[in-house]
Each structure stands twice: as C-alpha cells, then as structure tokens.
Length: 311
Image 1: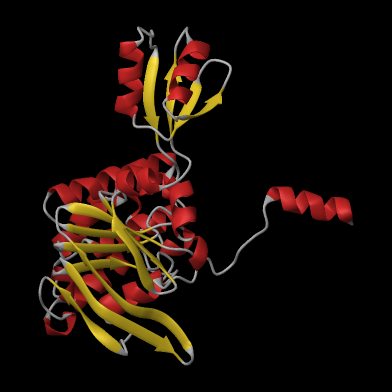
Image 2 (image 1 turned 180 degrees about the horizontal axis):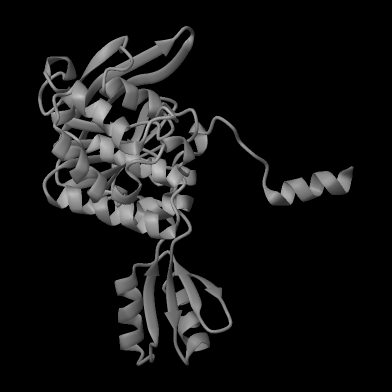
C-alpha cells in the first residue's frame, strides 16, 4: 500500500504539489492521471524519496522508504525507461541494479524471461527501441519481487501487442495482491487497465474514483434507443420531459433514467431493438474534470478556422 499524507513540494516560487493526500490499495491497478504540469512526476519522485517534501509524508506498507534495508524488495519503480547506460548489455544493466540490493544472478534471468527479453540479454541497451527499454525497465522494477510496483508511462514506445501485454501483465500482478500504481497519458489504455483512478491538477487532488464513475458523471453520455417506432416513441419520451436528438436510425435520450425509458416502452407497447447507456469516453471525462487545471490550453478547431478566415 502507498499512503500519501498532506504532501507539499515547492521549487522556489513554484508550488508543484499542494497538500496532496491519497491511498493506493493492494490488489488493484490504480491509474494516476493529470494534465502536463499537474505534479504527477514530482509526486512519484517524492514517494520513493528522490525529492524531499516541504511538508507531509509518504509511507509504503506502513513504513518510510528510508527504513527499508533493501527498498527493491518492497517497491519496484520505473520512472524513466531511457536512464540506462547505452554501452551496457541488458543483463549487465540488471545485474548492477540487483547487486545494489543484494539480489542474486538467478533472479536477473527470471525477470528477463518474465518480460520476454532473454534472447537479447547480451545485447547493448543503446541499440534497443524505446519499447524494449520499457521492458528492461519493468524487469528492473520486478527484481526484488516487490509488493508495490510504481510505473511512469510504461506503455510509451510499445507496439499494440506490447501495450496489451503490459495491460495484462499489470492486471496479473494486481491479482497476486500487489499494489500497482501507474501514470499514463494513454487514456484509452487506462480505461481498460485501471480499477481505480487518482486524478490531480495543479498539485492537488481532483478525484479518487473509478473509470465507470468518472465517465458517468461527465457530460456527453446519453441513452441510445433503436426501434421501428422511433417517431412515436420520441413523442412519448418528450412528454416525459426527456431531451431527444433524432438520428436516422436511433434516438439519443437525456434527462431521464434508462429504467424510465424502458417502462415507457413497455406501457405503450413500443418494440425496442436497442436500449443502451452510452457513457462519455474517459478522454472526454478527463478533459472536463481537469479543464480548470490545464497548464496549456489550445483553441478549438472551429476557432482556428475562424482565425485563418479573418486573416
């Protein structure tokens, strides 16, 4: 478990993390989201003691990381997949990390096998793609067989097969009762991977939630209805104060619960071919939730078109 309590970090006049508190529980994949400049990377560095907070504290499995004799046995970390010395082989890179925490040669071979890189173990990492470096970085995080795993953008540079592999692999680690904490900008993958989400902006907590909860709360969701009696049904729904958008073969319904839609259909003998709750995407929900915390805001495509026309 990771417990962050009232964490604050300043760099000169810049407040990077502001009285931030949350818990990351075992047995789940917890996603860590926020706009650029929100304080995610700083928070992760504070968790593992690479930066010192001005206020607050972090505990890992109810203890300070400073008290661990061999920290890699408690928490495995990947913050930068490109930090390896380019002239070292993959195996020697992992051996050097393992030696710092008293981890044996056998475990290095095991983690290379786990991440599918045994065949390139004796190749220099400077020749590796970013995706291969991500796998080596994950292998390094798993060397101590830790109960807590924290990864920053682990899917960067991976091909579709690699992205699916990392998703399934992290879910497998969570199923073993480990605490998995993952930062990513790939919201479509986070929607598939994460059991819980921690969302921050401008160094403060915005929400601690699930994918289902955050998308249900966002605007943009609707009830989709298909029926051979669309016009008649639309009139009935409008009578019940629903807002209707008519498409060629369906209705988008808002302002009414899906159960009520079904009840109206049953009462009026309306034949339904589809009745579905369509939630906003995680991307839409995230952008709506963090709208006031975006460090850099761009103009809409429509407004850009207007500017070009005006010029």
